[in-house]
Image (tube, rainbow, N blue to C red; front, side, top):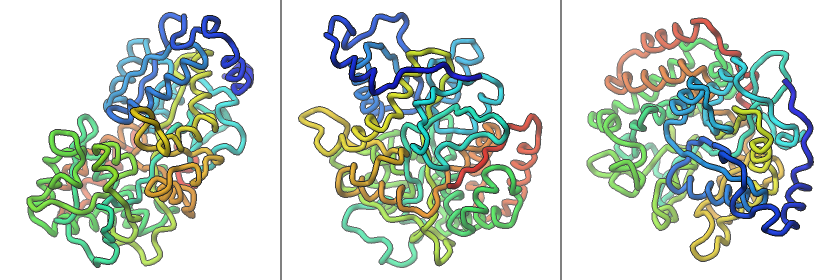
Length: 434
């Protein structure tokens, strides 16, 4: 399949802005129904995205209906099975999108959504094989090899940190367990390096390999350092008490509170604006158990990828708008001067090669951008790029492992490998570290 030629988006934007409001229907288009967009952003992130969509609607006169949910996988699958998918779905899991592409359920992106050189590896990872089409584009990225703490605290100076000092929560609705997979993934990356990580994440290195087992054992021994930590983590929501407010400044998961949280850059949106401004971070390689002496040059990242589930010119226009360098640059710097009662609290981190650290507000946001741009290698979240059945089983086995963190993980890993070996095989992504 190939996409039909589209006019240059910047020219379309300029023409739309020159037309009178009555001609382009500013504030609401006339098409029926509106474009349906499904995404993972709720709360503060959803409000930020809605503002971005309002700008698109004003410019193009195209109505958009956004549905934000933490169960994007399940909602999308229901829509696809019923023959009524959204026009655009934004997912954190490339494994899911690779599966949909392999089944012919995605439409190729318009060429101007992925101009040459705009995105480096691994952001445009694609299934191995002869098909040269692009089926997804990153519209938001996050740093994961990081540890949040209160500003003014330098945990790297404090020596080894026991598990009781860490905020730990495994609960996350339909995807409970993923905070634990993040720990194992980052430990594996910092222990064994990007080549081993890439081979494992793409299915070339078996789950039973000694490097993979060592990462599980390292985390298990660490979690067993406090008899209550693992059990408390299994009962704690990663978003904070009652599923909101964050863990770090709210007493955490342990009886005496916590001072460190291994969580992605998106976690700042879980906190209220004033609490979030009290947060700072340290690269995780300085604090994770078992990290190699030279660790830190390779970091784990994640992204939310947009894909087309309907062949729709308006949807292509929206997708190209979301990925455009002007849109992404504006969103990166929006937090610097949002105006009274307007604009997002925090920037959207971009994978676009022309959106530089200098575009972000000075302070924590710019330092995160510097980590994303300055790392020697970036590796996509492994559970996100695995085939859906394997990624989900990874979540489940992490929870089983935490029930007895000193157990030999060999049996759990063999079970995951057994499922990974079952046909049909989703085409392996070419490269998830770049």
